[in-house]
Amino acid sequence: MSSIKMLDKKEETDGDVEVTWVDQERINEFSRYNAKIDDLEEQYKKLKQEKEYLDDVAMELELADEDEAVRYKVGDAFIHVSASEAIEKVEKDSEKLGAATEDIKQQIDGVYEKMEGLKKELYAKFGNAINLEKD
Image 1 (cartoon, rainbow, N blue to C red):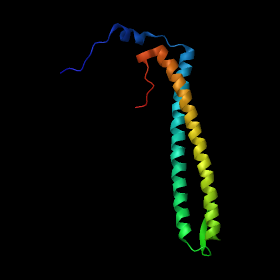
Image 2 (cartoon, helix red, strand yellow):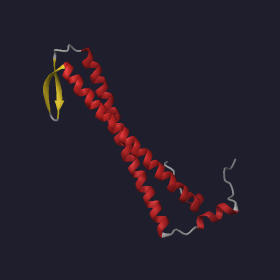
Image 3 (cartoon, rainbow, N blue to C red):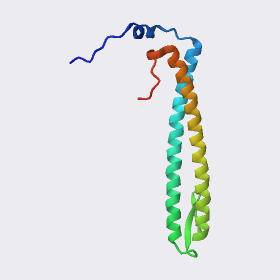
Protein backbone atom coordinates (compact mmCIF):
# COMPACT_ATOMS: atom_id res chain seq x y z
CA MET A 1 0.00 0.00 0.00
CA SER A 2 1.17 3.48 -0.77
CA SER A 3 1.57 6.01 2.04
CA ILE A 4 1.66 9.01 -0.29
CA LYS A 5 -1.10 11.53 0.27
CA MET A 6 -2.17 14.52 -1.72
CA LEU A 7 -1.82 17.94 -0.15
CA ASP A 8 -4.96 20.00 0.04
CA LYS A 9 -4.98 23.57 -1.32
CA LYS A 10 -4.25 25.16 2.07
CA GLU A 11 -1.20 22.95 2.69
CA GLU A 12 0.12 23.69 -0.80
CA THR A 13 0.10 27.44 -0.30
CA ASP A 14 1.66 27.38 3.20
CA GLY A 15 5.16 27.28 1.71
CA ASP A 16 4.73 30.60 -0.10
CA VAL A 17 4.87 32.86 2.97
CA GLU A 18 7.44 35.64 2.72
CA VAL A 19 10.07 35.72 5.48
CA THR A 20 10.68 39.26 6.73
CA TRP A 21 13.70 40.49 8.66
CA VAL A 22 11.67 40.41 11.90
CA ASP A 23 10.62 36.81 11.20
CA GLN A 24 14.24 35.81 10.60
CA GLU A 25 15.24 37.45 13.88
CA ARG A 26 12.55 35.47 15.71
CA ILE A 27 13.74 32.24 14.08
CA ASN A 28 17.33 33.04 15.10
CA GLU A 29 16.19 33.87 18.64
CA PHE A 30 14.38 30.53 18.85
CA SER A 31 17.55 28.79 17.68
CA ARG A 32 19.63 30.55 20.36
CA TYR A 33 17.10 29.52 23.03
CA ASN A 34 17.27 25.96 21.75
CA ALA A 35 21.06 25.93 22.14
CA LYS A 36 20.77 27.53 25.59
CA ILE A 37 18.32 24.84 26.69
CA ASP A 38 20.82 22.15 25.67
CA ASP A 39 23.57 23.82 27.72
CA LEU A 40 21.34 24.37 30.76
CA GLU A 41 20.06 20.79 30.70
CA GLU A 42 23.63 19.50 30.57
CA GLN A 43 24.60 21.69 33.54
CA TYR A 44 21.50 20.53 35.40
CA LYS A 45 22.39 16.86 34.87
CA LYS A 46 25.97 17.43 36.09
CA LEU A 47 24.88 19.31 39.21
CA LYS A 48 22.19 16.75 39.98
CA GLN A 49 24.70 13.91 39.68
CA GLU A 50 27.21 15.75 41.87
CA LYS A 51 24.50 16.29 44.49
CA GLU A 52 23.71 12.57 44.43
CA TYR A 53 27.40 11.83 44.98
CA LEU A 54 27.47 14.19 47.95
CA ASP A 55 24.38 12.55 49.40
CA ASP A 56 26.09 9.15 49.07
CA VAL A 57 29.21 10.54 50.78
CA ALA A 58 27.07 11.92 53.59
CA MET A 59 25.52 8.49 54.11
CA GLU A 60 28.97 6.88 54.25
CA LEU A 61 30.21 9.49 56.70
CA GLU A 62 27.23 8.85 58.96
CA LEU A 63 28.53 5.30 59.38
CA ALA A 64 32.05 6.46 60.23
CA ASP A 65 33.32 7.06 63.76
CA GLU A 66 32.76 10.71 64.72
CA ASP A 67 36.30 11.11 66.05
CA GLU A 68 37.88 9.30 63.12
CA ALA A 69 39.88 11.57 60.82
CA VAL A 70 38.75 11.54 57.20
CA ARG A 71 40.22 13.23 54.15
CA TYR A 72 38.10 16.09 52.79
CA LYS A 73 38.87 17.59 49.39
CA VAL A 74 39.34 21.35 49.24
CA GLY A 75 40.24 22.48 45.73
CA ASP A 76 43.05 20.22 44.58
CA ALA A 77 44.22 19.22 48.06
CA PHE A 78 42.91 16.94 50.78
CA ILE A 79 42.79 17.93 54.44
CA HIS A 80 42.21 15.74 57.48
CA VAL A 81 39.07 16.61 59.43
CA SER A 82 36.88 14.75 61.88
CA ALA A 83 33.94 12.82 60.45
CA SER A 84 31.41 15.16 62.10
CA GLU A 85 33.12 18.22 60.58
CA ALA A 86 33.19 16.49 57.19
CA ILE A 87 29.46 15.75 57.47
CA GLU A 88 28.76 19.45 58.12
CA LYS A 89 30.86 20.49 55.14
CA VAL A 90 29.21 17.92 52.86
CA GLU A 91 25.75 19.05 53.97
CA LYS A 92 26.63 22.71 53.25
CA ASP A 93 28.01 21.75 49.84
CA SER A 94 24.88 19.71 49.16
CA GLU A 95 22.66 22.68 50.07
CA LYS A 96 24.65 24.92 47.70
CA LEU A 97 24.28 22.38 44.90
CA GLY A 98 20.58 22.08 45.64
CA ALA A 99 20.19 25.85 45.29
CA ALA A 100 22.23 25.85 42.08
CA THR A 101 20.15 23.05 40.54
CA GLU A 102 16.95 24.87 41.49
CA ASP A 103 18.28 28.07 39.90
CA ILE A 104 19.13 26.24 36.67
CA LYS A 105 15.72 24.54 36.69
CA GLN A 106 14.06 27.98 36.91
CA GLN A 107 16.23 29.23 34.03
CA ILE A 108 15.21 26.21 31.94
CA ASP A 109 11.53 26.86 32.68
CA GLY A 110 11.92 30.53 31.73
CA VAL A 111 13.60 29.71 28.43
CA TYR A 112 10.91 27.12 27.63
CA GLU A 113 8.22 29.77 28.21
CA LYS A 114 9.96 32.16 25.80
CA MET A 115 10.33 29.38 23.24
CA GLU A 116 6.62 28.52 23.48
CA GLY A 117 5.72 32.16 22.80
CA LEU A 118 7.99 32.26 19.76
CA LYS A 119 6.63 28.90 18.55
CA LYS A 120 3.08 30.23 18.64
CA GLU A 121 4.04 33.35 16.69
CA LEU A 122 6.08 31.47 14.09
CA TYR A 123 3.60 28.63 13.58
CA ALA A 124 0.77 31.17 13.31
CA LYS A 125 2.58 32.85 10.42
CA PHE A 126 4.31 29.93 8.71
CA GLY A 127 2.13 26.95 9.60
CA ASN A 128 3.53 23.71 8.16
CA ALA A 129 6.28 25.54 6.26
CA ILE A 130 8.46 25.69 9.38
CA ASN A 131 9.57 22.96 11.77
CA LEU A 132 10.56 24.06 15.26
CA GLU A 133 10.39 20.67 16.94
CA LYS A 134 13.50 18.85 18.16
CA ASP A 135 14.19 15.57 16.44
